[in-house]
Image (tube, rainbow, N blue to C red; front, side):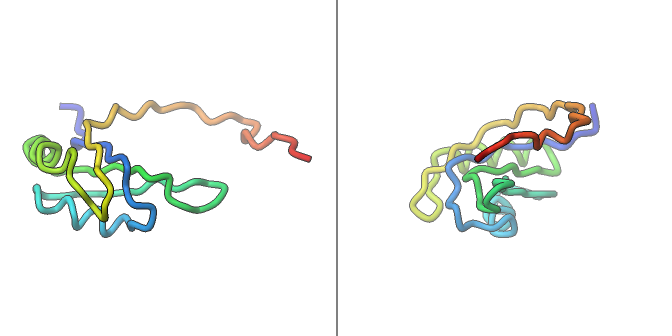
Length: 101
């Protein structure tokens, strides 16, 4: 094993949902070790998706089966296995070189 815990991508999240609420919601399927909602760097608002990490593959599979297509605050969740993170080197320039107006 690579040592990485199983992670699920969760899409179509309610924009007001917190990472703690996401973690609590998915805990019904098994032991959640981490949950994070991805935030927009510019606005600080939720992008409407996040990731949930589980202690075991079985918990992650159970969560996917339980919650893919489930309703959370009138939103239909999209739950799938997260693609492995790619370690991309950061640009030495910092990447903030856009010139707007």
